[in-house]
Length: 468
Image (tube, rainbow, N blue to C red; front, side, top):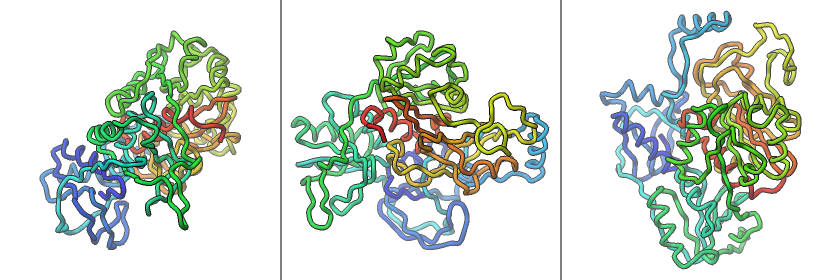
């Protein structure tokens, strides 16, 4: 499993495998390997990065290794045909979940199959901290980096800045979302405090001893594209009528994984006075938010218009937002043969209605201009579960869009051609505020670490961005 420039994420995968009793090793240096791509294809020579994970198949847990790492689950043909028949009849199916396989997809890492065990030095790759004279750069490409950023953002004694555009500095390209901490904007104990953060999280922190690079590069760490991060007052709506599992996934990630301060709010006690105290509101899945914000959602709309940011997690809250005037301009697909969203009360024949997807992995394209995709590559994998499909908002931007690349896992034949182009995540302006909506929770079972950065970018940076 190739670490690329994300050794900390690869180390997380190794830890997960070892927790299942699987032998997994980390490599200390780059090496060349004859290997076959994870999804299949011709064998080729590839260079594997330091910090990558080696997993031998010659071990007692061979079957478990394949189950956790294989790109495509192998299903009996007769069984798959029977599942299609049950779905067509509107009956319950046997396939119900997709969380136990394909760790590389869930972590957004590239994997390879090799016929021979390579001769390479094995050892943990540990981050090294070097004090800087001018600034520190934190590339936001790993879970460890976001764990570090969550420790920095929102505190009065930290003033990080975030790159809105890529920057080439010191011979290295830093992507959008890279955080910069200037020594002159912090106290004299900055190095000691950052050393502690590196030790706690395992993140990569690059030291810079100059702020300006002349010549052809003409790059400056003081660029106007390095935007200051304003503290965010974050809240999570909990209890009835929100989905308890969805709220639980968010609470677990906020408290146990990222340690990002937030306030849990009882849904039944929300008011304009309460909402005024917060900048970002996380809305777990539910189709009963009328009980919280009113039938016309005036409470939520007024708060958004005044500058708040709401993040919806799941198809039910997405459909609820789409059905409220002045909120989301996106729309659910109810008729697979219709162009665009269908009317809510339209009568659609069963054979033209979306079918339930028990759980699969789809390829998706990310918007390179939205701050929500900081730290994300151009193509990612996302879970697709249930029957809900959405058309993106015409006046907003579709931040994550399902691609035409065939999905991984079992998807009903009727649904396979329907995925391409559908909105998986979108972003819209509502007055001075904004709405961020996920058709499927990126927090699904708290098992998709690659996708956490999408909602964390909203939680961390929404208040720091003007109209885009």
